[in-house]
Length: 180
Image (cartoon, rainbow, N blue to C red; front, side):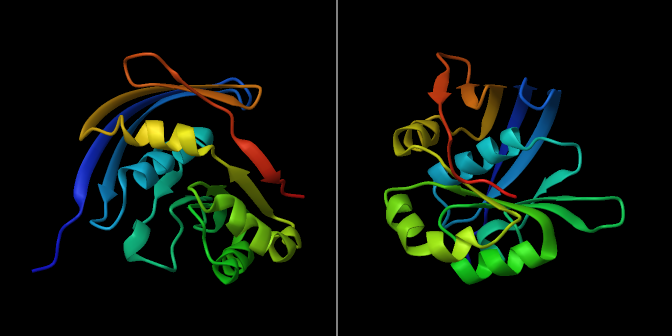
């Protein structure tokens, strides 16, 4: 019998001073059996950093041809395609052709190696941004994953503070590539 996804619920309060976005978001995340808590929590962080009423989670690991997060316009055209992890360069190129903007949130112990191997090819994609999330921050977020979560996120001057009811995690995303 196939394993089923585990459902997580998060009440996310976003105060993004950089973008002027202040809102509450009720999130339902399906964590695929092969997905780690770390990856799932990076999806929550990616949502917080791009929060919008039209931003939605994709089917995740069960679908190679779909974004981890996507924002569409009223016609259904993809405005923003978000990938988390270390995606294949060809998949990123394909996403860049389907969306106005693509953001990759790279994380994990192999992120620097992945970037060195793909920086040349990915550097030529004008509508792509690549952001590195520090390993210690993503591992700390993984340790805070719960089936029902209340998360406060503050973004100011490129710095992120995430609070799960205790002391906030201080995260400094590092831009490796900016979109043109």
